[in-house]
Length: 378
Image 1 (cartoon, rainbow, N blue to C red):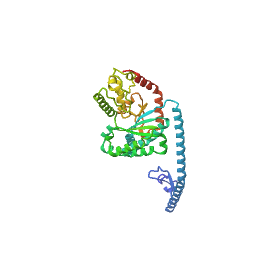
Image 2: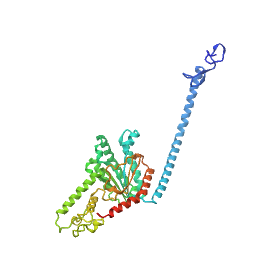
Image 3: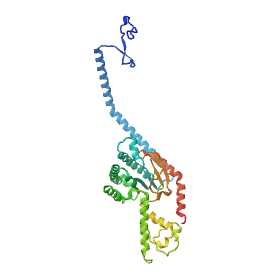
Image 4: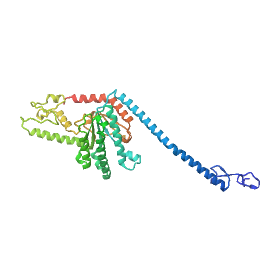
């Protein structure tokens, strides 16, 4: 029997069951003739065709069910966001939120997207969602760090790709903000930075976006493009220096023009005027206030590119980096800083919720320090 391969008959005849596969690991099969094998194959083919036809018939139903589930999930998420927003609005809500949108390149590499531009395009989609959430919460100003002057040092092909993306997205953003839904919010776009460093197409798109939304007064979106804080501060200091030289060159009896639209109040020279002692000097008369450091601070602040906006209350950065990367160094002195370990395209409402809760925890202390600084005499 052993010689017969496991059969039970005498004379070593092979039994009715033989092992299947090369090593017998697939179990046993019934030995049969060619006709039986052909019949089995046809039966298996018919069964497979019937199964495929059944699955094909179910596909529309499966697609409809998936769409229904997605719609239900979206409705649930929207309800949860509304509830969380209502709870957040019971506490302090920042007037101005500044964001360093970091992690687009790393997202592209981690997801194997192949092109860096895809990560930046997804980052733009995230930005639009975040703007909706913030404006719904009552935030009046949002400033985003889109492109640093230092980024021009990246490979030329990457810079060209990013500039093309910036041009297209600025056009898209201007169109979106003038839609019926966005028009109700009245969002005004201001592109901040050295626009002369940008390619002509990007510069024209930025100017068109600002012109298209110039009439809006409900909220503000500052886009820092071709920007660094050091460049901004240096430019402001040069502007103030020119103003001071012009003031010094004028005769004592000649009136002084207002600085950045402020009222010109000429009064007798003094070592420190009343406004300077209260750290709220708005005078344009250099001779009356030149001894006050606060006066010079006010001049510099009014010469900054963000002079039309209040300083940020909350400054957050994604990607896990814990540095400001030359972003709003002057304006962010009393902002609550929140660093999140999430790449920007993955940023979601729950991350924003966490950042706003951190702001509510620390906002009183930061505002108290800011008030004390503004009141302190120099």
